Image (cartoon, rainbow, N blue to C red; front, side, top):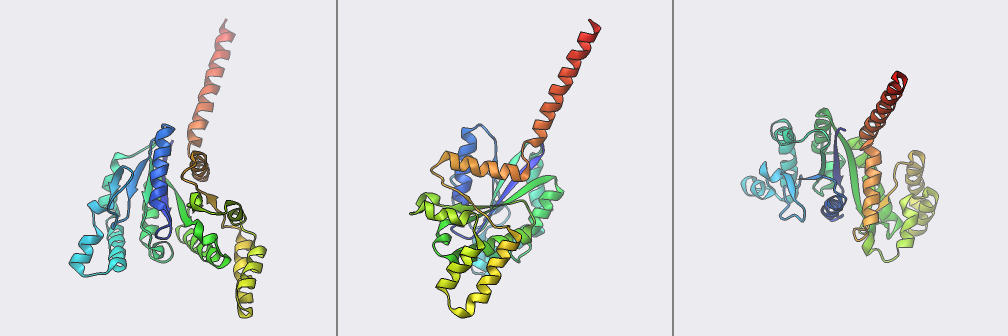
Length: 277
């Protein structure tokens, strides 16, 4: 069936760990096995069981104390340390997982990790080389759609991660349960670049019009950025998100093919028996 993984990424406070928590609960309810992996060396507590924990390799608290680094510098050091130990540490941790296993990596919230720092891309390359089919799940707070300029900033972050990681990519609009006007959010799920440009031009000065047009044109030309809404209070919403990710990585398709092949062989066997009679 294959080995599958989600890489849950996005800005700090965007609801990544909350998504992993509720995804785990949902999979328990539907009797589907997943394993959660913590890649945040600054994490302190979890609302889901952790199967693999980067803090067994390196923790932010230790790095800050020993190297006299601040939180951001310390976290980047931790991720570079992970990058240097992918084969030795993560490779050993993954030896206990194989066919039909499904991992969900809960990643740190420093956005530079997904735009220009190479550690997460090295992780992606390592997982793929080890036979894992990986999807990137980019979480963006629904507060980003309160203004067109905020939405553009969030969409550009998502686009940068897509370009950097080169993975099947699903963008989540998180915290929908907190959105005051859910209907107003709908237009941002599959954004119309022309409406965005008009809104931006109305809220910014004339000197930004060419820039607004260029940004809107970028989104329009490549049609890469769209969002799936996530309401953690709605099981159907969580199920829809999981379905979208499964489709992106073709989860379960090998099993379906094998079932069809097996049924076909059974049918052929029955025809042969009938011929002998």
